[in-house]
Image (cartoon, rainbow, N blue to C red):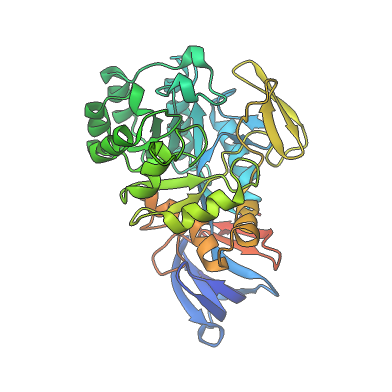
Length: 381
């Protein structure tokens, strides 16, 4: 197979920074990471004149983008358009997120993702089902009329969907621990979210197999001195990973900074976009389950003022993390690539620039804006 090489003034491997190194690519995978002078002479070399080459971003929560909403039209064309919109901002792998909907919606969403992965739509790496097994008390923008308890039949459907990874957000109030255990034992990644559970119930769900918390601080019982809630459990239970929406609107920067310092490992805090159709699109209005959502100054709300997803992209989240949370660039990049890949069990092929990993790469300029993207070694942006 033909060798190509991308040479950058600076390269971040997922672990460390290297100067004047190149990534040698063969057959869609990384063959080697070498100093410029050691690049094989037979390799076709593309020298990037400036900026940083990093692992492509991995986004575990993407509702829409480019004017498209997964819930509105769950088909392959929609998934391809959403992925293309986020690819322009550095995301090389994402989980299209299907939120609470009518019962017939989930099978359609699963089939769409199966088809997209079968057809090799670039960037579609699995599916995130956010609901409908949530708490009405912490519904956020989810339609309360469609929220319901998790059943054995639902578990059978999800376990038999033929997709990996599947990320499922549930509230422990509407998802018994025995069903969480069934899901976890079957390979589903269970995340606690849109939940009013107390600390003990949240930690019991984690002990039953839940390994994540969906958009930390948002739509969950808060951290208080005598009532730590889901938020406290997320920070205190080492097995739980926590996604955050780092856009300056969903959570105060001070709260996010404290969470980063407080999080008990090995679970880590990672970036998600929770993006809606406005991401990468000029239209300020769309509809979610028949309800109008409007973008004003980068904030998406229902008519009653409830936050309804975000206008965020992953490169913006990285910039915010560096500029406002006091996080070093290497750690911010890990929060956008390596950590979500580890949470989603994709880290054997994504999240690092290293031999045998997928050649999923993002070229960032000095302002951390996306300049180019490669998926499986093919330049797509």
